[in-house]
Amino acid sequence: MFSITKAFLLLIVVIFTLGAHSQVYHYSLQEVQMMSGGMEKPIIDFRGKNVELILDLSKNTLSIPKVNNKTYNIRGLNLLGEDEDAFIYQGFSSENGKNDWKFNHYVNKKDNWSIFQIESLNEAGTSISYVCILSDTTIETKVSKASGSGFFISVDGMIATNSHLVQGSKEIEITFTNETGSNKYKAIVFSNNKYTDVAILKIVDNKFKSLKALPYGIETNAEVGEKVFTIGFPLNTVMGDNYKVTDGIISSTTGIGDDKKYFQISTPIQPGNSGGPLFNQDGNVVGITTATLNSKALNIQTQNVNYAIKAIYLLSNIDKVQLKPKTTLAHKPMFEQIKILKNYVCLIRVEY
Image (tube, rainbow, N blue to C red; front, side, top):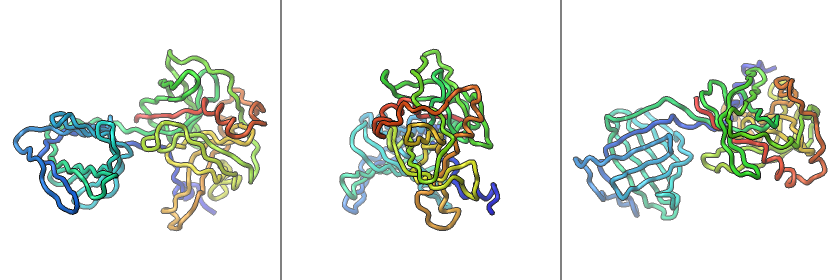
């Protein structure tokens, strides 16, 4: 029998998307090099000319104002690896909003040298490297960012999500789209239950106007083999801010070690799905997508083993909100249900 502690070691419990620290780095650009056809050659030598290169991770941009006002927009920047000498980050970029490039950032730990290498995805073997050294004007603000999903549980701005997404948050921004367009609002943590991993947020923004009646309710009964689907915002820094839909079945009515708080589901979930709604065929909420099995912790290869907190644990946190099961969507095909349900699912961005 698994202990609860060991069970959580086997889960990637935090499946929200975690961003890098919000930092602005100022570099003195030394040289620009081009690699093409296996040959590397310097293009421009800036030594002694005080040309600044700015890496702004709060805006995800790499800019060189004095070189043709060149700016690379970076997305999906992640730590690829490190050794005793350097860190290596990798992501994607576009130059002044055009053309996709692969972005590599090598950071030397000992003497503050950095190389920003931009590789063309269309021209194999072609890359441009900006070789520079970190200036003394480095500005750093220790703010980290993350994103996940959530869904409305009341028309006046109450939203359900995962506790682990908003724990320790300083600022929360809610984004959702409906017939009025895309809307962004500030929110606060209204209640937070670490044990059930359920949090309730409340929009505290004068611009927010009450929604139409919710088209769904909370369903506490679900069977093995029952079809389910989720709407959420996985990997939004890479895949974009548009909602994504995945479906599957309930594989088990218990989680790891037969933990009764969870459903095991075959519905694929990714970082950023954390806190999203798990709907049944009638369009009612039966759970909150929360975690996926950690293959590395088990040291075996697993496929599509995911977990959702049962909706009954959501009800225990919202006793003042009436969300009885409804049948307004029950006889509609799934694509018709999604057209309606997507208006009540939101992208949650968090700063800590």
